[in-house]
Image (cartoon, rainbow, N blue to C red; front, top):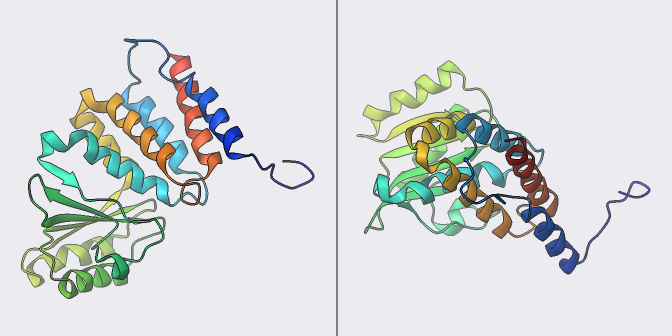
Length: 223
């Protein structure tokens, strides 16, 4: 930054900066992968970046992309980060189907704020309006969950004839996955990296891309 103004780089310069950072990532063949907790430390710091609303979504998508054959489920194509569900016909930010089918069975909605009762009501309205056969609607939040809101979501199961509402902490969700599928922890980090670097700068800025590579390189160098 110079005189309070962010330095602007050309596209060539941006690619070169990422290339240099990438040379320090995973540079030792057959090296011991980061532990689950070290992996979570890298992800947690990255997700905590301000104005990085897309990152939790990419982390959850990375989970399903690396575990899809073991889970028997896959992620439908990711929509634009600023597209409304009403425009795309999607129910939630991430839609999960059973392998070999197109019917959405699980939807994830990412929240960078506390989930409220109104969020649950709107989710159920979308399911009904679009005629989807969603069995699980899961909010992934970066904020604590109020007990009354969690109970409100639980109460909708009987009312809706089997739509289960859950509200999960983002890092906690990833921690559970990485311990459950421990041998996939490096695959998860690799996939998250691919998704982050692939995103347009309008969704994940150059600064966030560089920050992740620097965090990963520092963690792997410490080992």
